[in-house]
Amino acid sequence: MGRGKIVIRRIDNSTSRQVTFSKRRKGLIKKAKELAILCDAEVGLVIFSSTGKHYEFASSSMKSVIERYSSMKEEHQQLLNPTSEVKFWQREAAILRQQLHNLQENHRKLMGEHLSGLSVKDLQNLENQLEMSMRGVRMKKEQLLTDEIQELSRRGNLIHQENVELYKKVNLIQKENMELYKKVYGTRDVNTSGGNALNSYGFDSGEGSDVPFHLRLSQPEAQTCNPPNRDKD
Image (cartoon, rainbow, N blue to C red; front, side, top):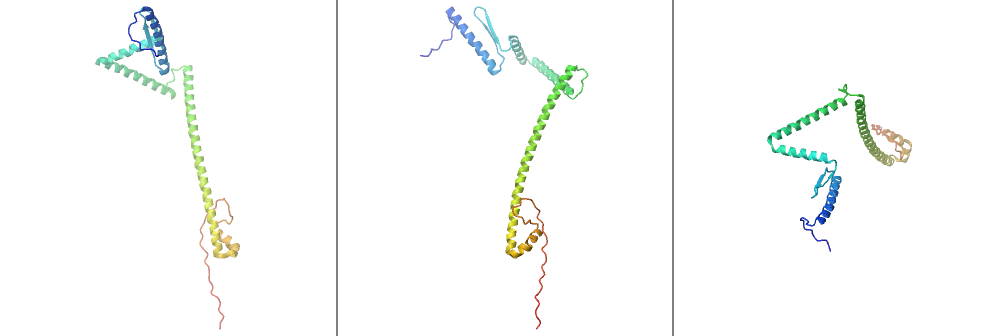
């Protein structure tokens, strides 16, 4: 059988009360540690026993947790007061102006300005920072150039494939024209003058050639028809 539900009330027996306090205290501290590790939270825990003995746990340090708590509580109280709220935002604006000033100073130093007050160590740190920045810029530049080269190579392969297909189509047209020329002029004329006639139209007589050639148009030669000589009566 499962354990029955415990009634939450003060334990009268002092021994049982002390045992329960010890067990619950250890469990509570364990849960606080797990919360700080799993959730990256800043946790502060303070426990006082009935005898006046205290136990504490802090994920960073109890002093920093208490100072942070006091600061947050003070800010909350100031926000409830309109006058204090104005002072609070004035203080926040001053902090932001200081941060902006620091960023501007760092930017000037990175640009090589206002370096007179820096020591050799500060200049060395600034140089290292610039070298790291330049390394990152070069890596990004090389990556972009590599991607662009790969894209151009891919386009070049596609154009090459298209050219091969066009060469095949042109060779097919060449063969069709050869067959048509045979039908029109006959085999004898094809053997004697067919090659010259096809060449006059820009066709290469070789079959299966993948070498690109240019098509050119030329005017057909005028054929003169001489009437037959009739014998005089």
